[in-house]
Image 1 (cartoon, rainbow, N blue to C red):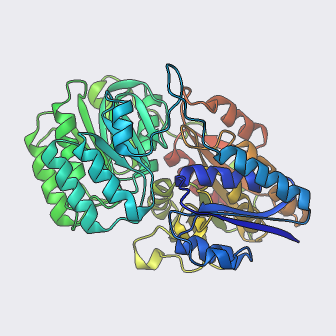
Image 2: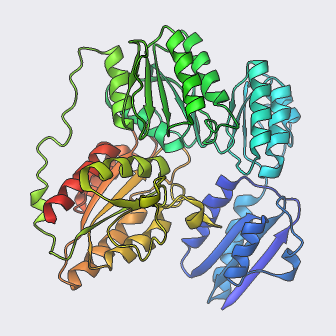
Length: 513
């Protein structure tokens, strides 16, 4: 085997860029493995585990770049390196009208774009707080894509932003939609009167696209980062987002999306929304409605319901959509054998997986997942566990040194084939995310694996039922309708929301056992 590894000192690239590039290199014919990443301890351990680590890399730090490729052929390795160098080579900096200039600091960026009012940061976690502080000092709202920031640093930055009247979205904030512009992972949706504050990325995306499908639009979607409702942070960004949307003349209805916060934080949120005049919809997944709040505060159990209730407040005459109208689960459950008793959910979106768990628990019975909070549902081994299982393949245990599956969905293919080989698997539930940041051909790169999985089952006299949900809109760059059509042409059941897909999968499985 031919192996080539290099260390580039003081050459930083954001994680999204490197994840996307790694995926492209791994797709090249003849490439066995590839790692293009910053030299964090975790990534160095990954290189050691795949036999691509060198002595030179021992002293590398998180601002250094690691490159490694392996193949049976030297020419494949060289071709891969050629692509890496081309895609990572900085564009020539030329001053002048219409020329692209690459700033090397927040201060330079502010000088080049004095009209800008938002800074999006994706730097190593060790430096994220410092750069965010600089942006706030320059009067910029901040979206921090970076993670690995301490709780103390996060709270300090959010308090600083609050005092300056600036938003601090993050850290680990993957999605926002500000004044019609999607930041990081976001879908293209119409503008409208619903403003959202969300502590989850795909949760925010899901309510946005459902609002779009239901005929309404979004004023702003403010991401808070996943830890904002932690007791040590105090929900600072959620509360600030509520205030900002309440003062925004284009926002007519507020929608809050999160997992249930700590009680002390929930009490602050309920106290705040009780005092504003605009209608508010609270969607805390697996949370319970709270009694005694004013009539303008509404509760929704899941993401689809959150979007539906918010839209109904602007369009009270609109009839509710009948979910799964005309769907006959028996048509598909009859195809399953007596041994096919298990459902497998292989998710790219973490909050979609969490919502799926909430739905399937109620509709199907005991389910295990790596996103579960209840001890009896917590997954200990995703490979060996029997029964119904939902996996969030975007969790660290699956993305260590690899792109996120929303960026490189082909990484899910091995899981599809593994689950298809199990005689007890009957239904495989999949999600596909479109929009900015996501793979351009999310469906296409998965179809080959689905076809192989079907053949694998057929050889064992089994039939697999695939159920899918495509998170996207007709405005997204990946052609939403084409992606859905491709799935249907390959015999896959496609539904219009994460909720419908989970319910349909549960109905098929329930009828079969």
